Image 1 (cartoon, rainbow, N blue to C red):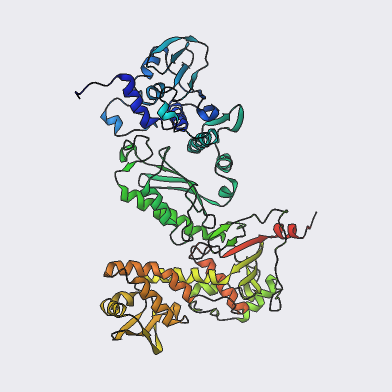
Image 2: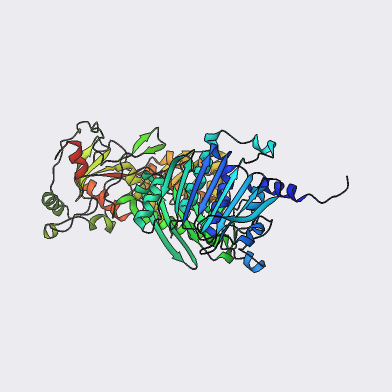
Length: 613
């Protein structure tokens, strides 16, 4: 078959296959044009899921009558004019394909006017022929009507889903763009019914109100605000606290210079920021904005512009991962500056649901009577008791009283009037699992195993990344039966294990002896710990890979060495744990992402008992 030039209409329809996947794609292209035109208000109307009508109105700069015909021509744009412009694209659209592509698969009407100028309209019937421009009545800005989408391409139309499904995609698109531009007002109507109307949000408070409406109030109430600028990069927005997580990445919104993207590098960088604090398989939620020199990012790598390429991808990755991790570390899950952390309900060890403790409709928790006599201490009594404890006690394996952070928060008779520490003072223990403490806000409940696990883990990480994990000799070396392959790796990588605090020696074909173990894990079940470590590391046989694998293994090592449930602690031991929590980064979550403590304010407690009602 001879080579031939394709008709212009067919060329447009082929291009439409890349640009116009479904009605939501049309809405995205038109809204981006409106934003590029400087609109401060965008109104979207939809009928029958977009199959019958998509109408978008904006108050942007508008289009001059003599340029309307050019606007529906392929590769005609006001946004770039040369290669230098393309290499530093600052607009959302730039290819000049949206309007001609849409006009080739739908009936299209464009009405527009520049400020103080006459308005005109252009009408197309999907055949490539256009009527106009001709005068019309229209305020400054642009209105675009798209009717009967895919009416002339039946094969494409049959792939459209149900009306509800298509509108859901449209609503998701509008919401995503509304998150990107707080300075612009948005409204959405479907079949004559308003879905939402969002005024411009110019303050952080109004921005958070918009996020609450678009993403959900639980997210914004359990999020941390971010605003960090370093070396030409700036990231701002909101990230969820680790105790607010999702089974899917459906609450992950990331924007590069205002453009919504779904980039693997970015997703992985943010995920790694949550590496130590998120339960396995859970996904963080975030609304983040990255500002970067347009010359350092290529947005022209995908037809739908959902993907970008960074010139210095490693630098962007490190910037995001390290700075977001620092924000999470500094937050400490609410130990400082957070008056209340939502109570977590645990569902088969995985998910976390977090009802508010400030809702009077919540039922009274089913607390059983404690197995020990409750200790009711006010601040003065606690201070007197702590004054008698001149040496800070150890409260279990791996938490030494020699740590100055432990004793720093203990009151003495001389400073009994000092401000109460954030985690307060212990009142007692509940069923050998929870510590009850009193602070200035009310009652604090601490999961002692989860909290201690985090403390041990952070100390192991700090030591492993420095001179190596501190070890101590066993009075009686322990013999552990292992496989021949495991014994061989112990012999080969003696120094790597030593850096992790283990002195292991091969005694025979399937026997190793344990001579030293990490100080923080001295009270753990040594045989089980060594077997677990070796069996988990056998796939990482190279020294470098083994070192990284051991670092990842520190979390489960910490679990072995932390205070177990049903262990009775003294009041002094409980207070030592509280002081260490205050001094430990990320202490608001255990190594698996579960909360380590919750705050019940006096307001919440009063609501339980209907005081003041």
